[in-house]
Image 1 (cartoon, rainbow, N blue to C red):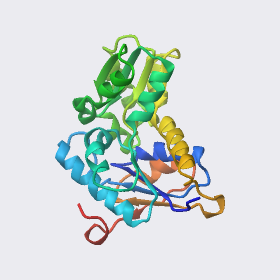
Image 2 (cartoon, rainbow, N blue to C red; image 1 turned 180 degrees about the horizontal axis):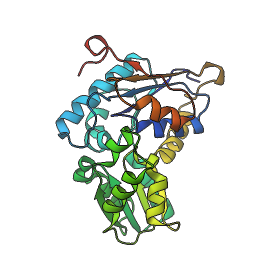
Image 3 (cartoon, rainbow, N blue to C red; image 1 turned 90 degrees about the vertical axis):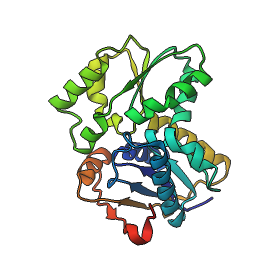
Length: 266
C-alpha cells in the first residue's frame, strides 16, 4: 500500500475530465492536480516549449511527494512524454497508449481523432493507433478552438454546436471518434448530436484511469481509503476554471495559486 497522492497535470481545466475518471475508478486515492492556466493553450506552442513546461510541472508534482504522474493533456503527451519519461525515476503516464490499446482490443477499423493543432501535427495519435491496429483507417482532425471554448465554459451553447459542426463537416463515416484532447469530453453532448448514436465516442480519461488502477495494483501501490485528499493548483486563477471544474465534478472546487517564483520553475 502507498498512501501518497497521484499527480495530475494539464494545461487547463481539461485534465479535470481525467481526474473525474480517476476518482471514479479509485475513490480511495488522493490527488494533486496542476493546471498551467497561465500558459494555456499548449496546442499552438512549439515542441521544445511544451517539453520545458511539462518538465516544470513534473518537478512541481514531485515536490508534492506524488507516487505517479499523469500527463492528462493530449498535447503534452504527444510532444513531451517520450522526452520527460527518460529524465525522471517516477512513473509518468500519458493519455494516448491506453486508448490505442482499447481500439486494438475492440478491433475498430474506421477511426477519427479530434485534438488540438499541436497534437494532430505531431501525428502521435495516428502513429500509435496504426502501430497497434495496422489495418485501421485513421482520420486526424485539428480542432484548435474547442479547448479555449471549454476554458470559457462554452461547451453546450450555439457557438459550441456550430464550431463542432464546422470541424466535423468533412469527416468520413467512422465507427469511433477519439476525443484526443482532455477538454473535449465536456463537448460530448454536442459531438454526439453531430455524429449520431451509432458512433462510439471515446473519452480517453476512462481508459487511462483503468490502466493506472491496474498498474498501481500490480505494484502494490494502491492507497487505503481513510487517507484520501485532493489539492488543486493553478498558475493563474483569473479564469473560469473553478466554475467549469465544479460543474464537471459535481463538487465545489477552489483552486490554489502556485507561487511560481518559489514553487514552480518554468
